[in-house]
Length: 102
Image (cartoon, rainbow, N blue to C red; front, side):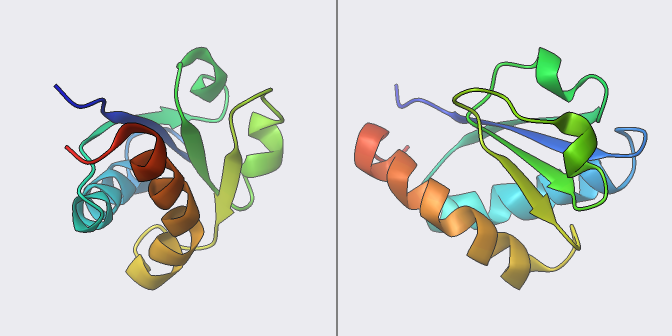
């Protein structure tokens, strides 16, 4: 069984726009042949999740802070698929090189 890419999406409360981001990111990941395990969180709890990458609204990324070995990506709009694709594309490509597709 192929490994799922673990992603945390971060918005103010971890309930609204981060869930919208989850749907968009899953769709983009499928374009790369990747299955994901995505958790929606707020900035305070994001660090508590073991993941490959954290995608946070740009104004919240500094609150998430730095996490050794886990990139924290700042995004302006969770509903802009082009922005998400541009931001996450290199990480998806690296994941495919390392683990293959699902």
